[in-house]
Each structure stands twice: as structure tokens, then as C-alpha cells.
Length: 200
Image (cartoon, one colour):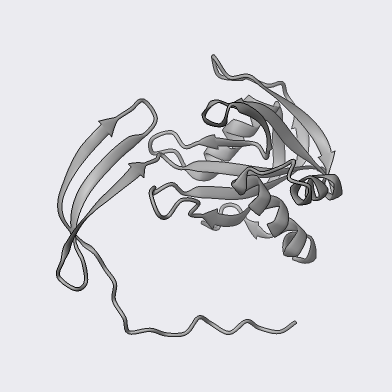
């Protein structure tokens, strides 16, 4: 296996320095900030961005070729989406603890084996959101505990079918697309179990 070359080293510094900051919107889930910044060339500019609590997403394996997926309605797009199980971080909650909690709450399963896959920055232009992707194996059904007002269905799907759904535009959720393509490209060829989840 060839070893990838590191990115080219650059001495350029494009850091933008905060001059002032104010809360433009304070919502139940999201907050919007409006900051004045000083650009590298000395000019001033405004930056609006969303503060997000962060989230986790899980590749939960029923067996080597089968994973859990969810179907739920997403109001901003006014349609149903097929997604990998996911959920937001609670304040001061460890991401792995969030993943374990969400897999039970949404899907009704505990997993005996967990490993860390990746950290994603899905919306770098307008949000500080981070998504932690975990793998889970050796599932044991314990029963779902959906939050009040949460409506979704969990189903098993072959990874090969899910990848076809990505190709055909049936699965369009970006984080789900990433998780599936990552596994197809890297995960299935790597050491079983990947990186232990407690090696954060």
C-alpha cells in the first residue's frame, strides 16, 4: 500500500481576528452569531455563523454486510430522508456516550463493540458543527426509547443496497453519504474494529 504524501507546507496565514461579537438569534437548538472581524489585509468584514452543539452518527452493523438505517421527516426540506442513526450532543457529554445513548433511544440496540471512525466538519462556511462518526458491532436489541415528538422508523439494509441508493440519489443526506462512502472506500479494507473508541 502506498503512503500518501502530506499536504504542501504553506507559510501563508489567513487568520481573521475577532473585533466584536454579538448574539443575533437565540433559539432552542441553534444560536446565530454576528461578528466583526479584521481580515489579513487589515480590512474589516462581518461573519455570521451558527453555533451548534455537535452531533454523532453511527454505522451500526447487524452483520458484516448489513447496517441499520432510519427513515424520518425533515421539516426544513419538507420530505422524508433515509439516514444513518445520529443525534446531537448534550452539554458536556462525551461523544461516545452520546452515540451509545442515541443507538438505544432511536434504534433500540446496545452494541458490545465500538470504534472511532472520523470527525466531520460538515458546514465550515456558516457553522461550527462537528459530527463524530462511530462504528458499532455485536448488537443486542433492548427496545427503542424515542424522545417526545420524535417519529422515525429503523430498518436493516445491505450496505451494497445503501450504496446503490447513494448513486441513484435516493440517499442524499450528506453525513450519511459520507459515512457509507467512507466505509466502502476505507473501512471494509482496514483492520477489523478500526480504532478503539476510547482512544480519543
